[in-house]
Length: 152
Image (cartoon, rainbow, N blue to C red; front, side, top):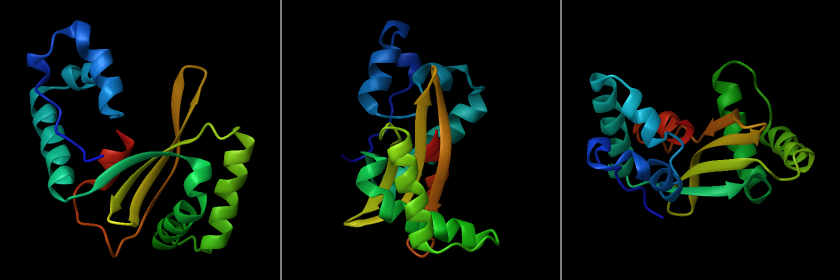
């Protein structure tokens, strides 16, 4: 699935916001976008457009499907921030989380071809979405607001 740009919220009747948000797979709902000040809405659209133009394919996966790959990306994030941990260690942590959460963790990942270049891990619990982890293949990033587009 290729990420498509979200239409202007002003062109969508409020009765359709929830349905469109569910169809798009985006974490930032139309309602939340509409609540932002005009300048922020422009920034959000620009960041979404940059992500789409970078050619990323956004996929939504179960944590159990990608724990090893996500672990390698999480290890890069840890090392970048002065907390080195091997990819195998981070993958084991994510596999344990998948098992402990009955595989309810949702991963939003950015792909370039067959390579996963970024991910965010979210868990739904008690009506709240909790973001647990992110990770990046820094050498393959394209400077297209990857964090924003996978978390929001």
